[in-house]
Amino acid sequence: MKTHFRRVTLALLSALFAATTSAATTANATSVLAGIDRSVVPGSDFFGYANGAWLKNAQIPADLPSYGASEKLIELNEHRVVDLIRVAASKPSDASVETRQVADYYAAFMDEAAIEARGLAGLAPTMQRINAISDRTALARYLGTTLRADVDILNATNLYSDNVFGLWVAQDLDDPSRYLPFLLQGGLGMPDRDYYLNDSPQMADDRSHYQAYIATVLELSGESDADQKAVKVLALERSIAQSWREKQRDAALRQQIVTDPHAPSQYRAVTCRNLDAWYTAFHVTKGQSLYLPPMGRVRMW
Image (cartoon, rainbow, N blue to C red; front, side):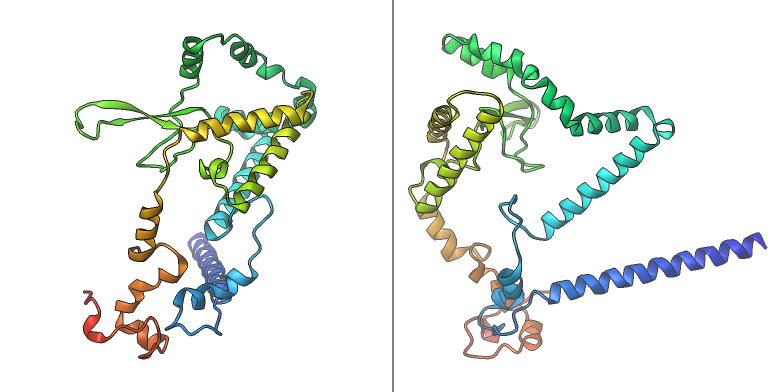
């Protein structure tokens, strides 16, 4: 009887899982197909055909610079992690020491009243060290204390650091028998040097909004003359940006547009041109801009 009950239970769970998986798969497929713009001819602009409707209708959240499948997954994961933490916090007696530490840390982070009551007291030691800097030697010594292993060029491709320098320790690229420290540039509040040095109207507008943001942060922290100090902060970051290495020179960007199939959107469908099945599936015919004669297609096996 017990064996029969377990088999029935297992069968029900399997059926439920299969139904849930099937429903999720169907929903995902529907969501993907909804992004197609069927007014675009696939053989002329496959990227526009596959993504056109999504690009026209998708809304980027106001607090994000971009939005897509990766951001959705990150949001979903963050919500699930928060739910796990809240469950652990609601049952402290059942939680392990490590789980309880996580729950306590989260609770402290969310306790806005306690945070407001402390004000900037937690930053006082740091501000004292900064105020004590009197020459370049003292500045170099202080910057050394801010070094953290917070960047990773090869593995996590994390190139950003809040500090003026980011530290990465890895095998020597020329001699793998030893490890070396690598320093990366950091210290900017905006993504890269172009946001500070580019003269385009868009970048100028971004700088204006960023300066207003700095002023708001200073005002919330209790600083007087926040607007004037924001000008100085932005000027300091601009001087840091001037020492940054450029990502790519203009000539390299032009060459990328001409040769790289993964550069601008209109070039991202080049690989499809070599697949015979693609022509049949999307009715791509001679005369359309993405059509490639059979003799000119790369053979894949």
